[in-house]
Image (cartoon, rainbow, N blue to C red; front, side, top):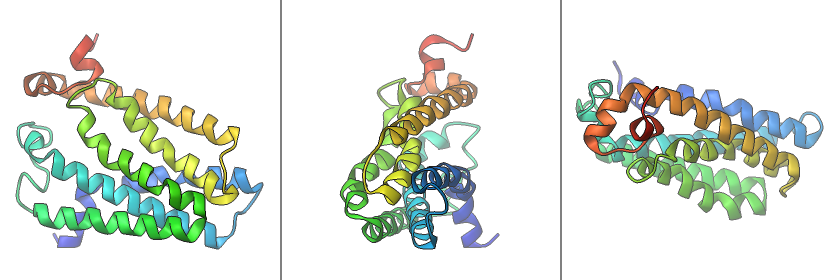
Length: 201
């Protein structure tokens, strides 16, 4: 397996593909139609950069936790198939791409990019202190829709907040279910989730 294949698998590139439609739908709604290739291209770049930064950071931050979890022990950092330095460099490159894309879109996008980065990077730490981490993830993923709207309009409008809230609750809900498979390991490692705090059933 090539190094590129390892990297794409480690950062779950397919998750970026999953999140892109949220931004695209928001762009189309904000524009009342096709928003133009310029906007679509730079929003896509921002999404790829932001998600790459988030996933690479998550892999680095969670590498010791992953190594102690049978479900995740086969990931690339615990197995030393990729290095911590490589993942940090990848995270930095993703952040730079996101900032460049935000700059190319409009001033508000660029102004809000550091806040988006804070959530993209900060989510990895939340399960260490709160079982609300599921909805922090949902809120963070919801930035895709809000960002798509702002990329077109250059401002926030009520529909952007509605889409953001909907994604926060929806993604938070299915992350809650996904976390049930790790309830035993989470409790052993002192990690927080709804399942670890309140039980699965």
